[in-house]
Length: 113
Length: 114
Image (cartoon, rainbow over all chains, first blue to last red; front, top):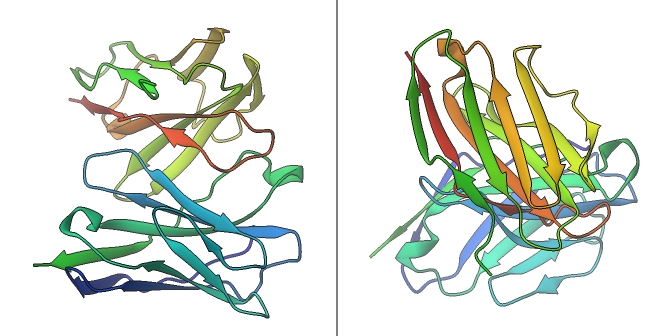
């Protein structure tokens, strides 16, 4: 699986959009970008994933650059409950990486009142 | 849906004792994963099952660790004998999709080995 680079921490004001970047310059053509988050003392929670196109669901939007070497997770209206560690994971859908999620250190997002 | 259920939520034991962690996946999910999370090593995959069969146990740290899935609704992770370095939060996750990385995690078991 391709390596990802995320800033260790970010701050955001409540009600504002939180934009969390992720670099994955060695991503290969069949690898997806997955985002999870982990709120303190809870298990990780799946947020969204994508391959090439931008994706949106009820939780967030995922913007992937055209060259796929980086992506941004957008929480459109951050709330205090969005304070968590956000993990960007790049992984293939099958083969030797089948079923495996490799979590890095992630970005600690703190949402302030 | 109740989500992935893990028990116990907290476990304190003494070095050398046997520890058994339990997991009930979401009904209908064919894949079950066990992870361990520590400050030093982060979140690591230990083993995963497909249709109750272990597929990849390369992450199991050593022979003191064993995992079973006797049926589709129950799995155990056993540590015998336990050591202080096994202290961690152990998560169970499940997914219904082949090859999917959209895994649903349980609340975890916080293990402290004294």
